[in-house]
Amino acid sequence: VIGTSNVAWQTWPDQLHAMLRDLGYVVPSQAYTLTNLVHPSSGPICDNAKEFAGLETPRIGKVGWASWGFAYDSKEDCTPAEFEGQPEIGQHGFREIAGHQVSCINSWACNPAGQGKGTLVSPSAVAEDVKAADVVLLSNWINDSKQRWSQFKCYKSETVDFVDTTDITVVNLRRLIQAIHSKNPETIVLIMALYPGSSGPFVIESSLALTAEINEKVRTRVNEPNTFFVDYTVPVGQDVFQTKHPGHLNCRGDKVLATRVLEVMFDAGVLARSLALPKGDDSARCLAETACEAMVDKSCCQRSASCYVDTQGLCKSYGPGAQ
Image (cartoon, rainbow, N blue to C red):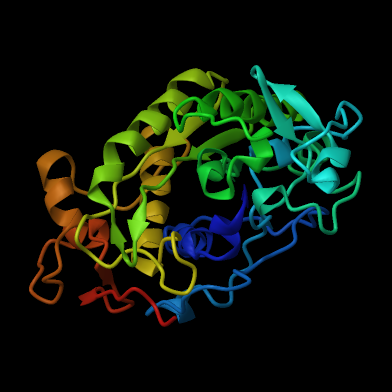
């Protein structure tokens, strides 16, 4: 699993691991050299945390980074430039990506503190590290479209439209995916979708259309073999975002992500068996269902963000997690 704070502060990789184990799959625990976490470094404690607390799920989680931090083997192509009275940022240089000047600093708001020539995740090193992996999940581009909240410092103060940031995203994702496939063309790569905006623990409904447009641009333009896009929907009006780390999904939202990864892998023929899940209108209805104890349809319980099937096979209420 390769990502930013969404893999360092969220539980969806761990929930996914537990689901795969319960389906009879084994997630290999080979010795990776680049992973910096096997559990979340921070985040909510889920109602079913005991079910995955003992599982180690290797991940690269770089808080605040964006897709360009995982797309280049060095910073040799970075050109220093004057930058609005902030010489520390300018000294680290910018590179052109899809016609935009993008900072070579890898941190939130391109803060230069602690940055060096080696502050990056090399795609060649990733490819070598995961060459025996069956599946690699990428959630490393989520911050590309969020640079407005840092005054576009990473884009050399260019006001890049939310949707236009996908030009940068696609270039960087393709560089990483192509590196992975250069070592093992059979490796399945899953790209996690961007989640919608939030206000407190709730989805901002007005952000859904823009989020969908961004996701569709990435989904349709990456166009790499053995690569699948994991889109998903989180229910409006329910507590699905954290209060500990605002803007990040909580245990309920992460359950939706983990379940959807299984579904995408099954539909793509990557998995031979998966959870029974409702389709069509029933899927949307079950996703928002909250009357867990009264639910008799196990597949509906498995789809719901606010319910889960416990170890006794009963549908129980699933909270946002202790924060």
